[in-house]
Structure formats: structure tokens, C-alpha cells
Image 1 (tube, rainbow, N blue to C red):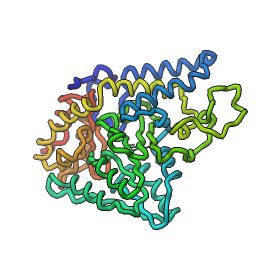
Image 2: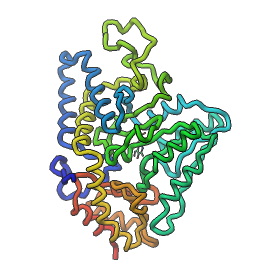
Image 3: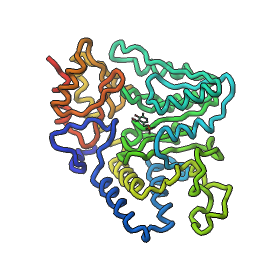
Length: 385
Ligand SMILES: Cc1ncc(COP(=O)(O)O)c(C=O)c1O
């Protein structure tokens, strides 16, 4: 079982930061790696051609370990989730009369790409609506069932999150991806709100693409993202043609001997200037922490915290997804009828509890720097007499 790691972070004592789904605070080693990276640029004569490759490959290896990928060349270094999904949109084989399946209120980076694609290629965008809240059980199961029912032999792509970013509903990706494979549809997963906090196994789920922003549950810096691209995207067309993704790009003196071939597997999809001397060492330090703490232990620790507050909040009329279908680390609370939202936000501010309002939900997202005290402060702010 993991223990509280608050001392590894610089969060002020009085702040109850329950908002990793918004942005992770930098841990001590991640911050130090960033400072060292900036300092390194004061002496560029010490930066060698090998430095453009080694840190990138280190990050690929670390992320591939986290999501159980055996060939780290299948990991691409990207600046954002929207960039990764644009790669999928560019390479997806489409046929007229096809459809793309998503769920209601997905994060916009995982919607706008498909809206454009569907408009340009005359595909149907099937948005699977969330069932009514009803009682405190059954909504997640029913939503998953609806997703499965929406996938048919005309489905070209299923583009889903693993955990819904507003309310923490879990999607059973192993089952959904299996159904997609039966229908010969591609599967693209936005793992931003889950990978790092809960186990994700590429070998089990077999997505065609998995894209994760670096600055939330991967504990890394902003403007980084990582993607796994499967064999369906081998030989595909990148968004841009940068020099470093071409074969033998490590031979700097030979770069004007232009090459048509790319580096292996998914490296062709790397963003230009991917060898960022500040951000990549930070991302590597962050991934090392996640691997050291392990996703199962982080998940169990967060589950313990969110389960602690569930009964008191349910009793006060807050709705949350049932225990089985909600993520351990991301608790979406729908407000009780009649509760004044502005007043609630003021109470949270006064108590220095940092959570997010997303869609119809208050999103509570703890990590290893949180403890019982933070959860008590949350309940104190949310329980209005
Ligand atoms: C589910 C999800 N996906 C992606 C992102 C970030 O997307 P992008 O990297 O395109 O800004 C967020 C940010 O909140 C998110 O919650």
C-alpha cells in the first residue's frame, strides 16, 4: 500500500489540492530536472547530437513500461492530445456511410477532430448519451451497454476516454475494443484522465492509438503528451515532415542527404523539436516516479480517499457513479437539487479546497500528496446546513 507523499511536493500546508485532473503539482525531482534542463542550455557546446536522441528514447522506454508495450519505438513524443488524435484522423481509412462512436461530453480535443472528419468525409458522428442518473447504481453499466450497442459493422472508429473527465465514469475498454475489432473499427483511447493513476495494459486492450497528456496523472510538464500507435498506423503519414524522424538523422553532417525512409514504428509521428531539453527530462523524472509508486498502488490509495467521503456526500444528496463504475481517483459529484452553486464555490474557496467544476459535476481528484485531512476539508465545505 502506498503512503502519503506530500513531502515530495511543494504544496502550501493550508491548501487542500484535490485537483490532479486539472494539473499535477510538480514533484521535487520533476522540478529539479526542469531547472537542470534550463541550466544546461547556458552551455550548448556541451549538448551533443546523441543528446537529441537519448532522453527521447528514455521517455519512450519509461512510458512503454507503464502501459505494457514491448517495443518502445511504438511510442511517439507529442505536444498535446489534439495533436495525437489529428494523426489518427489523418490516417484513418474511411468509407462512405461509416460512423464514428464517441460518448457525450468527451473532452473537446477528442471531439473536434471527429466533427471535422465526419463533416469532410460524410460520416455519421454517433454520440452515445449518458443514461439518466436515476438511483445511485446502474448508470455506468447502462452507459457501457449503450456504447457497445452503438458499434456496428459501419463503425470506422471508436474514440473514447478510459475514464470520463467530468464524472469519473469508467469505460470497459477491453470489452468495447473487442466489439470494435469484430466490426473492423479502429479504437483510439484518450488515456489522459487515467493512465498513471490506474493500470492500463495495451496488450490486453489492443487499441490502435492511446494518447495521454503529460501534465496530469503522468505528473509531467505542460506541452507534452505521449502516444502509443499500433500496427494499423505503421507506414502512415505524419502531420509534419521533420528531419529528426528520418532514418540516420543522428548523422548531423549528412542531413542534407535527404532520406525518404523514417525511423522505425511510431517515431515518424514525433512532433518537430521533440528533444526539448527542459521538458523531456522533467517528463522522464515524472514517469520514473509513477513507475516507482506504481499505478495499482496509486489507484488503491486514491480509492481509499474517495471511498471515505462517498457515504457522507451521498447522504447529503450528492449523486456519484456507483462504486464499480466510478474511477478510484476521479470522483464526479452532481449537486443536490436546490443547492446554490455560487455559495458552494465560495465555501470551497474559503476552505482552500481546490477542485474543478466540469459540466454538471464537481470533480474531486486526489493523488498521493493528499490525505484524510484534505478529504475532511472537502466534506466540511460541501455539507451545507
Ligand atoms: C480527457 C482529457 N483529454 C485531453 C486533455 C488535454 O488535451 P490537449 O492536450 O489537446 O490540450 C484534457 C485536459 O483537461 C483532458 O481532460
